[in-house]
Image 1 (spheres, rainbow, N blue to C red):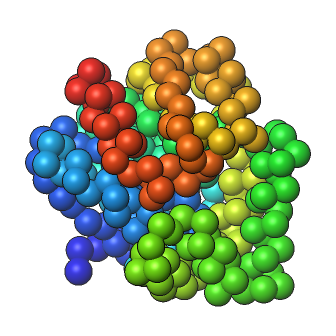
Image 2 (cartoon, rainbow, N blue to C red):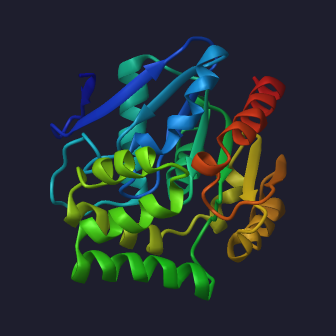
Amino acid sequence: MPFVTLPNNIKLYYELYGSGTPIVFIHPTSMGLLTFKYQKPLSKHFKLLMYDLRGNGQSTHHHEYISISTLSDDLYFLLKELKLREVFICGYSNGGCIAQEFAIKYPDYVKGVILIGGFSEVNTFLLRTEFLLGILTIRFGGLALVAKAISRAHAKSKAFYQELECYINKSDKKMVSHMYQTGLDYVATNRLQQMEAPLLLVYGQKDYYVHSYQYAFQKYVKNVEVVYVSNVKHQVPTLKGEELNAIIHQFVNKNK
């Protein structure tokens, strides 16, 4: 299986598909690269890099303090090892925090940023409650309960529900808890003006509690486009895969 070993001996599992302009997909806490199963058809047009964050899926970990900055450094090393530059970074939910942090820290590597359900900090009651619920569920109910809840919300078939539940359960419980906390603590709003690449914000039409987060990006980032996907809440990559793929395809072709 393909792994890249980081300087601290953590092994990141990754998968590469297709050829052409590279798009990197960053998953939310615990879900692993299986999050983007329905984006694989984009490999007919682009090179796709999907990987498991440290402690998630098939990647290894150390039980040490992590931050969004740490995880963006992991991606930098992965891209260096794979000799990829001028990439489009696509982050879903709190995976989008890693995407924007990477774009701010390593602008020479980034041609464009795509945030699905994105936010630059957690500063609303409902989103903060969701993060805290994730932390408490892990602490008292275990990873298995989180896996069931996330898989049920994201799956449109029994087969994918079972596949995703199994993949989430490969993650390390302590690391998942750390990642919820580091996502809760992350703030990029005061540095968004440093994001040089074009930015695409994709929100589910019914994902009302994150819609307000678009305004910070529109205020501070020079080139911002916002797209709403109809008849879906937060789970755009899995429940509206074809629509998302068309949106990504258009954005990449316009900015490559």
